[in-house]
Length: 556
Image 1 (cartoon, rainbow, N blue to C red):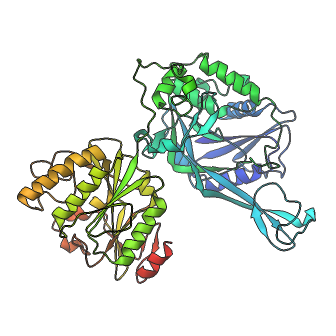
Image 2 (cartoon, helix red, strand yellow):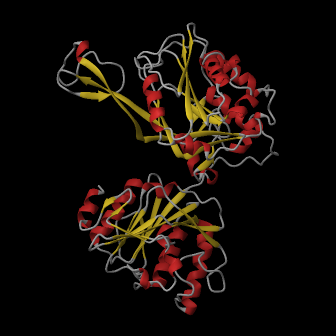
Image 3 (cartoon, one colour):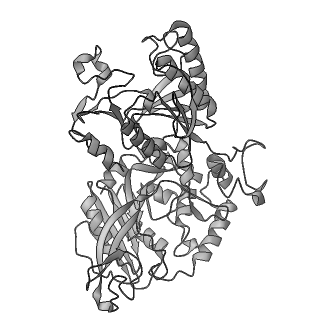
């Protein structure tokens, strides 16, 4: 009994060999491949391999039937269906198996695949995958024999998909905005639908839900079918962000599917009949339950033509408002930071802010965000008042704190607080010395990495300013909300950590308000500097030691 069978239905697929080779290169478990040549042998041909099994049908039986036939000969604990034009993460099989309950369907994080380039053999010019050009755009070569395909087989890292849905016609749609919801956080998160190119589950579970329904026809609606079966059977469908696959999309004229599929309309009609009318015999829940779970859903709950027609199990008036959570940035500065640091930080924030509003509060006017000036003396109480002013002026639901000497990576802003009564700190924060470029990491919670709901922050900083005005600042209360409980702290709300995909860079210089400690001997309690790591470079950012000025220049 093997760990995993990778099922690959294939019809006229020129990249089947590349896909299988990539799988064999990246597996780390007892994993096999079961490929189906549906209507034609593979071209180029496949090499014999003890982990590769081939099914051949001289007359095409269709993608769904081919997948079912491959699953029937598997004896593995898990199966994974994938398209015949995909690449995979190293150890994807182990990572998927480690997070898959019996009634789960797991979707790896998806990237678009850069499969190949075209190359002009006459002048060497290359251009990205697509239909073969009739002439070279550089040397005007028009001899078709002078063009060759150069295999690249790498993900397009900027083209990532974690979340998808289906619309009111049950057509697959991407759902990028879903990532901002609390339930979308974490490495394992619920997902409404998938593209159908790759999914993973227990083999016995696959047959519990009836395999693939061949009543749909050969191809189409597979992502919707798997999603509905996963959820409406009482199970779960999730994305595993700890691993990935990369899928080739052929959507250009002259660069489309390798075979005609006139039956797509049949698949969509069958899908609507099955799910809209709750005709799947294995359902524990109707479609309305799934719509309630993921509400509000674009094209369903914000469609005026569907008002009062969207099926629901909730009582009237209980549908979640379609307005999503908004995120905003507050930025505070004493105007005493090194100018080139401030500029680098502001430029970085301007590049990644997207549609988020930035509220800046300074002691002197600055041209950054929506600026407010407090004519006060530099100090701890002043900093608290600057933060409070920014919170009062912001109208966002969720606030990210940003400071004038911290470089923020875009992945920091992907986090959405799961709870409204908790302060969250990004503990993936490295310190770097401005003069030497020496980098340092230890696990810590800093105000510069704070994220929380605005209402919670407002409540806290109103109390913090009042108490500091009355009693003065004390190390007993500290800087960080949620670290100390009342009466020592300001209130009794708790703090938790999260770790962004890439770290923040806290630049330590001559005018930092807080003390910089570069030795563990400077800590009375060694538990407060766990994970102590000195380094010449910062992961994801590059080498800093001995070249910090150059490092700042290279960011842009």
